[in-house]
Length: 422
Length: 182
Ligand code: HEM
Ligand code: FES
Image (cartoon, each protein chain N blue to C red):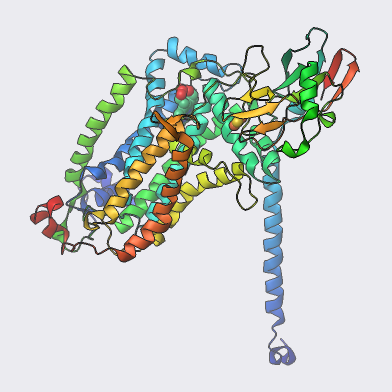
């Protein structure tokens, strides 16, 4: 498409030197968007909204936060009690982290369901996983900053995971801590990195959107745009739809901020860190629970590797496996809407992730859902097994065996026949 | 360029260029590594952290059967004044029953005093059982609430996910009732 003609002299002057306006025009009007995107396509922009909120609230928190082991806890309490609107800024930041993960997890499962990771979107998908990893690191280190009991013991347990590696394990952990236990040097470096990483995420988001604009959005049919009839301009159609989504999302987010600000939190984190006493029940933040369950489910040795190392490897593998699914999925069809068999496995995967989350929140020897004789650890092991089987076995095998339903000839044909019911 | 070099298929200039490229790359890699090292090493424990490496503890007010926690390098150290029964239990275990076999003798300097770093060797929680009334696990030692590790009256791992015994720090008895840890 031809470059736009700018009537405004100032706009033209700037655009001739730095084509920001052409770029915006290009993304808003010329970027063809499939006309059948559902609300499942709202979560990317929602994640972006939260990222901006996190950076803004974070910058204002830092103005009153003191990154020192003796003062951090009190400085956060001061933010809550004495700083004007400090409570609001902190609760926005605290609950924003949970909202960020909700938006991103839905965004990821959307991609899994509609096959958005398949060619030509592999690199787009990879950058997404890198964003997830960076978010996890950021949230983990942020949670340490208020220096409560959960901050301290969460940091202790998670950094100790690295001691599982043979030979380099112990020096590595000492290096991470900057001492012989989690302490002031640890808090300082986590603060430094917690400030840095969100900007790394921002950079990754730019790459993510760049890749998106190169390969274009997938859509609920998984059929690519073929003719101009299949697409509409992003603005005003999807700007308005994204804005509407943001309104709904903000209602939910702010409900928690104002009416249940500690819903996602742990009361123990309002007790100052005490290196001499571990709380009776340590749990990570909810968004880490499925991974924590995978970590703990390995309680046996295998091939001479101790359980602790295997658990750590399994936990990392749970994310690493996502990098290779573009090649593990052998089906020619993208969207699960046309995959009658795989669709059900996808439902099982979702349930499996919730089961893992439940197991991660309970003590290993607790009864599962109050069922006597069924321990949480056993269920966690089965759920871990399914998680890996899903990607490593179900994806390649079902893709080969399944007979997909006939695909619509084009997006517009599917829309004319009634979209989702076609 | 001489005719002979050409005919043997060797171009001395090209060889020299390859060498220069390799040498430059090698120096560049080593140089980058050397430039990075100060940053990496700055994250290791600093001199002041290393300097806080020992504490002295007075043992005279710990009655038999009780234990205390002291801070050493930011971690708790458990000092237990063991009873006759605890000592006997620790000595009587057959080594082949232990996950990380070690005799009780090798873990104490004076039988009545057990001194161990109070950090679970699984993922670093502080096991319970030092203060009176806390659960001490199935082996009269300590119990780690995080993932359920049981340690015996010699601080050895007996049950649960922890792989190793509680670490014995370096210490010396200055007198009969005072000990220097570290
Ligand atoms: C990717 C974006 C971010 C995420 C997911 C995130 C996550 C978190 C989390 C989970 C906490 C703990 C909240 C609590 O329990 O108190 C936290 C605290 C904190 N964060 Fe962030 N954060 C992000 C961006 C930032 C940025 C950009 C800054 C600074 C410019 C920042 C500064 C702080 C400060 C000072 C605290 C400690 C005060 C407090 O605990 O409320 N954060 N962050
Ligand atoms: S940290 Fe003690 S059992 Fe896991």
